Image (tube, rainbow, N blue to C red; front, side, top):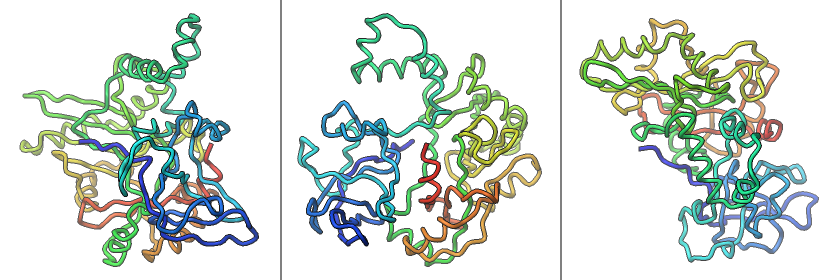
Length: 370
């Protein structure tokens, strides 16, 4: 049920425009994205490979050796005062022919960037002393992939296949649908919090209930947890969430499973960018029997549980024009820490549960890109 994010795709360049005081570079537009490219490298109408921000390219491939400085991670950049959101490469980086819209993430061995807080499991292992044979085989991607899976198995389990992972569509990937949503004027905006994704679930199993906690990509071992996993588990325990989910299932015999998804943030997480002394979870998804509930249902479900935080709702009016809305988010302050810029907006329809987009602040990403 979970969908993997398309990190590298075939796109079409729809516009090339000049950049003030820059003779050798141009600004290319693909869908809602704008990226800086070399002059004369592309023409309007050309197909290209677009790599989203937070893609990690394979720097063992000679084509991407120029990305060694960032260890292959695609970050937002700024050239001559112009934001460049992603990386555009010509089609000759591919061995096969492709059509517009094709996903080439796997073919180019592109991976999603994993924040430090979610890398702890394998980083503990890499700090151990290993034999020269182990070090030799770690040069090969197939061995690193196998090692990663082995460590994840030790630490917990895979992410449950029946739960959809949390990763909203960026508005730049669907500019027309985003504009349509804003024009309905039937949407709400919440603050995107910079933390670690957390999923908490309970599933009916006969007369009993199975319970689990997940980080972004894996289920945690609730009995044998590492240092970082303990933060997830203890925060969930402190909020008394397990009995809350059990009560919600017991009150509704027709419901087989219930899922809470949110952002875990605070001290010891993502460099504690909000300067807090504790850990918090701000929830944004309630799923019952696999269906995401709308905001009104979620609010009514949690009205009796004062300790459960929902992500802050913002009083902001958007235009549907991505460039104009980027100006708004780039200058918006966080409701959690008024001294900091907001990480971004999450935009959803008030009642329709399938519409969900995110608009990330370019200024925040540039400053906090780690």
